[in-house]
Image (cartoon, helix red, strand yellow):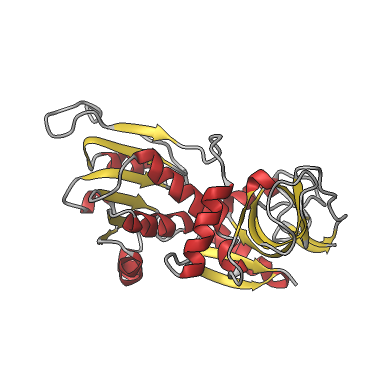
Length: 308
């Protein structure tokens, strides 16, 4: 089968080549991949793999062979899949615990963005608690996770506050996704918020924490910043207006079942209730363009590669 392989001699670190087709185990489905999403984390992982390896976390396609143990969807079902590798290929053997069915006719490019970006946003919002009527600040709002977090927060009845250093450029787009306010820095927002979904880390996390109100929660979801977090003197002290605030860590794979979440998100995308915010979409013969844009930070939103 064809696959996008790790190649440390190429400028992108990857090359389109040939790899053995995977043989699924009893609890695995064989999926014909039609599209996969590129993530900065994928690229970081790929840089540490041996040449010839097939990287790739999230991909979408159709089941061509259902799991032998009877679990998971039937052959012909469109699915979104997750794994710690193997997604950037024509075929993928994936555990049925790591995939979710999609409605017939689903845009496979769109649902390929679900496992990492949409899945992380959904579970981070759950980690923070009830959303109805609450102000929720999302940092790194123009990224794949950020755009989904804004939309899901709005669906949950929240009042999203988008934080992006490109606030002027993306203000209209982010408001169209559901943001009530768009600012370049947490310090630019005059009010307090109950929740922060932070995808950036560093000093931005520190300034976002400063906007939390009583019982507010900051969910540390990612760390794009190159520096660490240094809190000023007494920043963690309580006062009558800002008491019992917390910073919580996050890991998407906490043991709760993934298929129901993936299936629900796939359905929301197919019905148009969610938008995937795909900023780059093209053949895997052009994957180097998307990889370069991710590495230079010029790509805002999701990059999706179409197989074939």
